[in-house]
Amino acid sequence: MIKNLIFDLDDTLYPEKDYNISGFKAVSEYLELTYHTNGMFEKFLALYFNGQRHNIFNCALKDVNLSITSVIIDELVSCYRNHQPEIFLTDEIESELIYYRDCGYKLGLITDGYSVVQHKKIEALNLEKYFNHIVVTDDYGRECWKPSLFPFELIMRKMDDENFENYVYVGDNCNKDFKAPNILKWKTIQSRHFRGFYSEENNCDKLFKAKYVVDKLLEIRNYI
Image (cartoon, rainbow, N blue to C red):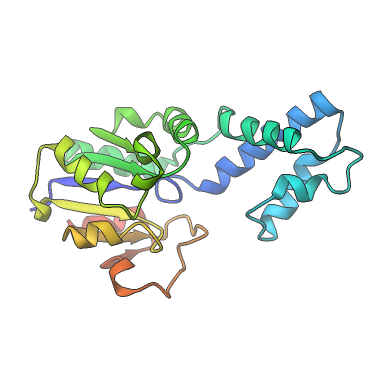
């Protein structure tokens, strides 16, 4: 009997691109204020929406009259990671969380990413009011990021429920989200609600794939 619903965060409960855009905005404002640049936000967005996922700051600054040093790049990365994100739960996602909470399910969250970044996201989305327990894997070390078993076993202890039949895990990324809960014999569901960067990945080994796939978060009601 399902009692505990455990969720991923990025591209499962909100669209991660919103965080990226928020970060690019903060960095562009920092550059304008500190180094008197112009048009950096548009440059960041152009690179991002053309598929660039690494070294965006270096690439965007190539055509700017500014000496690119490791110090400047470190400043921009710090600004990006430490900014207060402008992100929100959609009404649909918020309604689902309220529905499950009011139905008596215990809700948990397991999220990867740099600790300061993920905690700021959690704060911005006001998630603590919905979840019984939240695990930011980076709080315990990089080796505890998914697909490590550690955060899943930890949240079972926090939930005070060691029965695998009582758990559902909902995530989006079959490269890392589902291996550990599959090993633990949880029910696993891939949500493609936000059509995130990894939501259409179909070349994963069977162990990495979710048992079920849904296009909307409300569809997980069919599996619990």
